[in-house]
Amino acid sequence: MTDRIECETLINVPIERVWEAVGDHRRFGEWFKVALDQPFVAGQQSTGHITHEGHEHVRWTADVVAVDPPHRLAFRWHPYALDQDRDYTDEPTTLVEIRLEPAGDTTRLSVVESGFDALPTARRDEAFRMNASGWDQQMVNVRSYVEG
Amino acid sequence: MSEAMLKAEAARRFAALGDPHRLGLVEVLASGDERSIRELGADATISRQALTKHLRILEQVGLVRATRAGREVRFRIERGAIAEAEQFLTLVTRQWDDALTRLKAQVEG
Image (cartoon, rainbow over all chains, first blue to last red; front, side, top):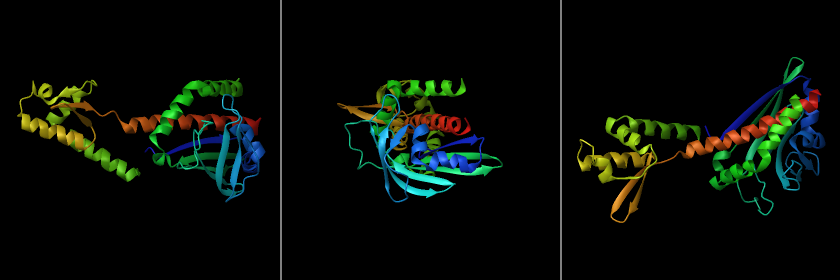
């Protein structure tokens, strides 16, 4: 299956508190590493710029599909759209669905991103190239910071 | 490509491999080298015609690729478009895993 990915994590706080970090655009941006210009509103665009080290100031845009507190945030975007000189507007988007589910006093959060088969193969090459340029090392840094 | 289409494609490839001659050809080509029909036929116990037929079947299901070099046709294994797509998804998944790790730390911390 090459069209979608799924990730999941269990978070040790009640669902409403997790939603605050997902549905609020400023708090979302803290962990997602993006500075957003406006709140998430279904049917509207979300704009901003990436704050992730190595890709600062790369523009970020997404079409918000759904905001259903406290259970679901969904948007369409261009994954790995990291080339500042390029206009991705006409390329297909993937759909990101972030879902929250209560599990007692904890919260199960899942992310499903789908639509990869529609992406041009050149985008994959770009992803591999961008990834090799330091993004990977940042991931390692974040993980050791969080666990350390 | 939908999951159903991917499965159908995989089934066709496995069916193509379900023949000892074709399996043998794929094994030879798996090294990554290009071979002409003449080279592939050097050790074969089947006719040139049968060999060509087997290679065409492998080409039709996307397991080998044929390129024409002058009057000669050369065959090589077709490295997976599927493998490449899966590698990309691994990258994407890793990005999300790390983002979710940060979210968890931010909310629990």
